[in-house]
Image (cartoon, rainbow, N blue to C red; front, side, top):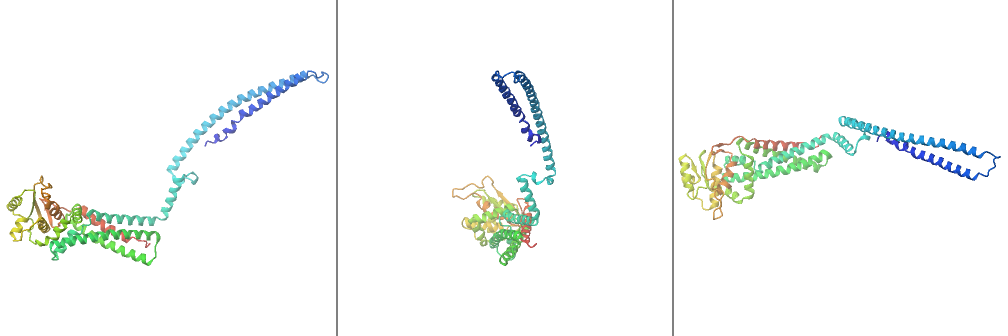
Length: 416
């Protein structure tokens, strides 16, 4: 509030005071006139009353003139006061704006008396953060590490270890179908353990960071979860890095994961693949779909002209019993896809793929739901239709995130 405005009320009392003076003069004149009318019988020998009254009236006129002068002075005073108040308020506004500009630029110089609730709260929060900056940094690192580790699992659908484990188990002499089944189960198990232990480890480490817990049971669980998180995320990261090098995309792993979890026919096809243990030479695999009822012959002749083979020609050339029924054919196709390597070729009628036949089966169903899904996670396939598989940065980064995130989450605790 402007300074002059604080006293304007007192200065504005002057008109009322002048009015009271004027009323007193008027009352005095009235009483004097009454006295004159009643005193006509006063003896002149006592005093000359007319002379006295005339003198009093002259004095009254003088008082009235003073009242008029006071009224004029009051009017000028009011005008002066109003102008001074206006100037004072404008000056106060300029001063306040300058003060706000100064405090906006140099906020740390603003006294507590000038601060509002939010500013006081912010200052308290800043002071608290300055006091607990180590705990805050540690907590943030734990949360970020956990998020990276969990994101790596989500990005790959939990199937990051399938290509690597399938290869290792096959090299160890395990048949292709059993190897992929075991690889899928192990990969999903490791993924679940990695996510669960990462969450548990993060929570306990954050609690310990702020509370510095010294309890044997708590510390035992904390240590166990830290080690579990570090090991499981480390293993999972190895699979993702391998996929990045082999060109296996995260999207292909998510599709494999979805098919495994939701399509029992897909799991059964992989589980029955060991019934068809044929040999598939590298760079010869040829897959076909949507070519009609004579499609296998069309594809066989086309592949043969290029020095390649199809599933049907492989079964025939290696004297393997011909599959009977859709599930048996799906299992044979799964085995053929798992055993393929090098460059893969497809002969497709894209316009027919996905259409539903009268028997309820989809045209190209085996290719769309079994063969293609397996080929995309087969690390030994180097190209499909001439499109080379290249190093996948997304898969590689998933491995880095998983390993680094697990290490950060489990490595940071309240041991300060």
